[in-house]
Length: 123
Length: 123
DNA sequence: TTACTACTTGGAGTTTGCTCAAAGTCAAGC
DNA sequence: GCTTGACTTTGAGCAAACTCCAAGTAGTAA
Image 1 (cartoon, rainbow over the protein chains, first blue to last red):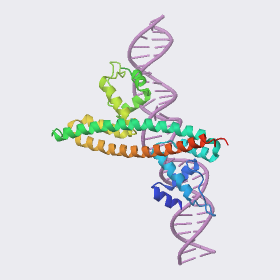
Image 2 (image 1 turned 120 degrees about the vertical axis):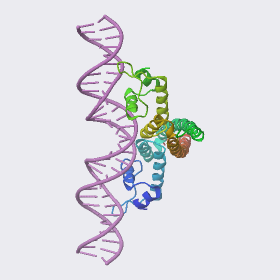
Image 3 (image 1 turned 180 degrees about the horizontal axis):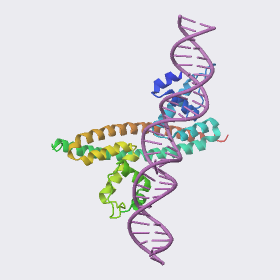
Image 4 (image 1 turned 60 degrees about the vertical axis):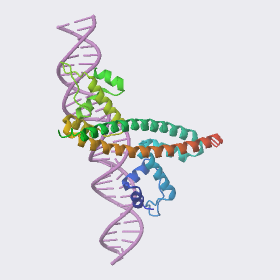
């Protein structure tokens, strides 16, 4: 799969894909004889992993660190778990804050709607 | 309430509070005769509002726009509601992505734990 | 009055995460 | 063989959200 196909599939730019590879958010991608990226199934899986975690707000440095540990093999299971657990906690905290904000937005929306319905809007 | 007390209360820096005021994320704060900020109850409520929405990831520009509309009075209920609803949708989407990521982390953590328990770790 | 500290402002600097540009390389079609 | 277009690299540039700094002022304590 070419870089173009991958970025169309996931709606990201080729620059971002190359950037992720450069900083280790995904491992080095398979290349053709000519040096052109040719994403394998496994490469794609790494891309999906990276996008999922990035969309959830995990810093690229943390994801890169996880990938680095993963590629070091079986000795790093404990470190990997510790990293993952720490990120899980961060994410959980973030989720709670977002639920708070959602409630706050809902209350505000409700108040706006009441004002609009009661004809208050625009005097 | 002085700026120092406010930033201790909410664990943010005075620079951030001044920055929020400057860009309109909170309205202009009450001052003493000498020009020093003296946060009123209402000012504090605005600070809490700003922090809640910021912690949930809303851009400062959007929060500032809401504050601007709010201060324009009753004519802006419809615009305010539209802004809030749009942000609510963003937030909802983000929440779903984070839940996905949480599941992904949990699966990874589980796999690490199994490897660790089965003595695979460290050979 | 004189220190001293905490505040003030405006503006520059930092970090994160991309994003773009320049210059060169590769592969396919004519 | 030559052109074309998509790829390659390196490095600079950019936006968001702070964060820090310098220079000045305000209020208190001795």
